[in-house]
Amino acid sequence: MRRELGLTQADMAADLEISASYVALLERNQRPLTADMLLRLARTYKLDMAEVAGDGGAEQTARLSAVLKDPMFADIDLPPLASEDVAVNYPGVTEALLRLYTAYREEHLALADRSVTRADTADAPDPVAESRRFLAARRNSFPLLDDAAERLAGEAEAEGGLAAWLKARHGLRVRRLPSDVMAGSVRRLDRHRDAVLLDDALDGASAQFQLALQIAYLEMRKSFDALLKEGQFSGDSGRRLARRALASYGAAAIVMPYGAFAKAVEARAYDVEALSRQFGTSFEQTAHRLTTLQKPGQERVPFFFLRVDPAGNVSKRLDGAGFPFARHGGSCPLWSVHRAFERPREVITQWLELPDGQRFFSIARTVTAGGGGWGVPKVDRAIALACAAEHAHRLVYARDMGVSDPTPIGVTCRLCHRAQCMARSAPPIGREMMPDDYRRTRAPFGFGEG
Image (tube, rainbow, N blue to C red; front, side):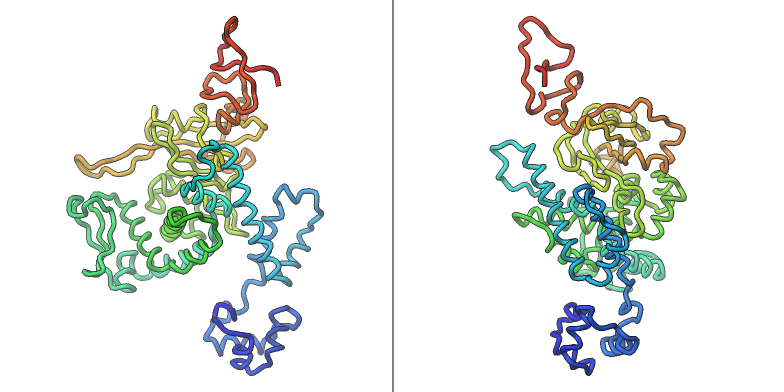
């Protein structure tokens, strides 16, 4: 609190009429924070008592416990009470450990990216990869933004909606204009006319999301900057992409507040279409939000999200489920997300099995962006949500489905060693190809033993 207020220990001591050494002892947890001292803090700095008292270290305990579940700590005896003791009594040490672990995760993901990148491009900055690593290292979960968004959503509801809130809080009115007037923009903040301009070709869900996005940029700037300081970016492009991702996260959290959405997903058994109707959001927006439900102490099913175009290009990857596709490029053609274009707007379910035996449950469906009028450009994409097999029973889509016949897929062809795969497009790293002078296998490539 002292640092956030920009005070020295001597400054705070003078404000509270105590000694600087006593402030130091309080910060090191060597003196109890008495009721009298709590009242002084609240009175002196105009703070809410609940804000001063905090949550007893519950959030830090939950975050530390989640980190200590990493397989790298599997051989260390770490009882839950020890984690709680460290988090409550040594918050500075806890924060240091959490920062180190996040930095380790980010470097680990960067190393995985480099391991499958061609040598002649390995040193070139990749802003998209940097942004993805930033999100993946944090499991696409930002409780700081969730808390701020819940507050904003409550204010907007009390005001009568996002448009009314923008008018009351920032003096901005919302105007819908024709696409030709918007000149290629779907949203624009017009400071000269004190207005937020929206393309009138946007459907209801997209228009609402764009308003929430503008609110996120107006209200969450400091939070974005604080989070981005922890990232590792080689240039402005990677940082800007990550910032855009944080803004989209904040917008989704405003439209689908964490508490209400987390409750609804359990009630509706993760039915994406039903959740979309309840919150007035698109299928893609709802699926995207499902990957973010990892707030410590309030976790839901962890999902991996993938979006591809008809050519197989991956335009978005978000990982909250430890799915290897989040680190390595490409995706397996046997995954149903690539066949979704054959069955437009139909939810396709599939059990998947990776070469190491890990099993996942996946749903895939096509989505459309753009359109809204004759001649207005639009693009069709397919999205997939996948979760570990152990969580599948909580999804309405997996009910009455056996796991007896999962589809064997790989991370990418270069890393998959299933030699007999008919869909293979490239030989795996480390396998010697056999000549086909006298024998041609059914699979595209024949390999030696090993």
